[in-house]
Image 1 (cartoon, rainbow, N blue to C red):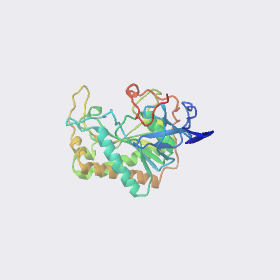
Image 2 (cartoon, rainbow, N blue to C red):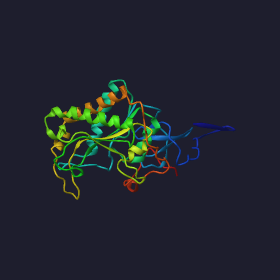
Image 3 (cartoon, rainbow, N blue to C red):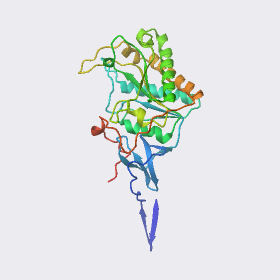
Image 4 (cartoon, helix red, strand yellow):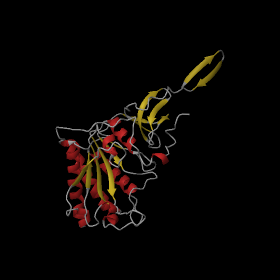
Length: 309
């Protein structure tokens, strides 16, 4: 705070923010606000921070903790007003994603690794800011945690799916480890759907389409080894007709979530212990030209990363 002394009178003036940075400014580090909002930092001045908001806007914040780097970024998929897949009995994928991410973070931190989770389950976070959080922190690895939908597969084909960055040996290796470790962790629970042994490893590369797609996170974080893991099927279908999935009830149990979190953590630890020597990373997606996100029109930013007047 600045204090101006004029004659015998004293006036207090708050510092004024500097002009907003250009939209394509590359973020460096993130700000974690008092309410838990994670926002990539675009610029700093004596009045606070210019940040990238969860809705991919340029905003202001005047309080928070700066995090410059971490070993691991965990991204719980969906959240806020976006449920993700929903089981017939109302289990929301977003809630399962958040719970598993929290458990993985605790396990990795117990091994001495620094971890940041991209967002609490309280607000919408678009795909592009998720990738920017990763690139701003330059972690050794990023894993986005999801759980799949029945209508996206043949009903009798179980299995974990790990999606890797196109043409990236590093990302593919991480996908292989996640596929193997998660499958091994949940197989002893005794359910053939959980084991996934009828299907075997499934991995898909991010597509080249420059428009939006659900794998866009892999492009937006392309300077960081990143994988999206779909660990099991929550079980919902299109047009309001949710078929059941034997994995849905399992995902509601602590035992299944604990086993899944163990598998994800073990895969990350194994990857960090011996990452591949070559990268082959795809080109980074321009930060100022985000792909279309279907949630962008309805996205509302949290109050503590306010938009400039």
